[in-house]
Image (cartoon, rainbow, N blue to C red; front, side):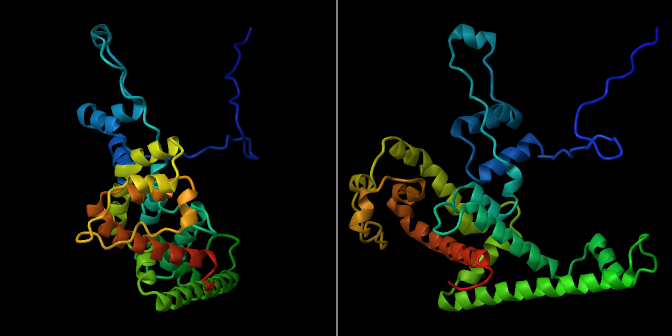
Length: 306
């Protein structure tokens, strides 16, 4: 009797019968993942301690008690971390989105603001000179400088399609840039803040005002979550705060409408829990964030002023 052959692997297949291969995403080493998580304030204090003492892999996977620890009655190890997609933290707007700084914007969701900013950046840099070998080769091919083209590719049609696409992209880009400039004329600083959040090459950290906001929000977030858990109203939270020192604080944080004091506290009210010594810094950094969000809202509208 002949032996049975290898069993057919389950899974979605291509028309030629081959399995559809799902590319694996390289998330980086545990150290890199932890560093990216730390940039958005997503590493709890207990996990940070495990990271320093036992390494990044142990912090991500969680630690288990040894038999000796169980015998001594030591507490349980730190549970595994709740991981976020760290690939979203490689640009400023991704870090702002992951840290929750784009939440609570009227009219648009945080995802819409993030995607609009990234589309703008992709369009902007697509129209700028690029020294990449691959992009240069493609540019030569569509410009007719390459003698041989792939089989079935018509040079004239390729040139016509490329020219039409370039004109469409340039028209859209100029409309967006013109809208940002007109918005910047109404309030200075919007164009610069939007560029810093979308275009400037801050891969690992930066701009400085965004890094400070993420760090400050992370430091008070446990207190904010506790206030939310107790269903505290905004007026109750404000009543528990000490009176500001006029000599050190010039920001009128307590000048809120009477009707606003009766609403529940939310994560967007995290700045109320900052020490007064940091209020002026928060005011400066949050102003830049608000200007950047104004620019992102305009990008969502296609460059049209509201």
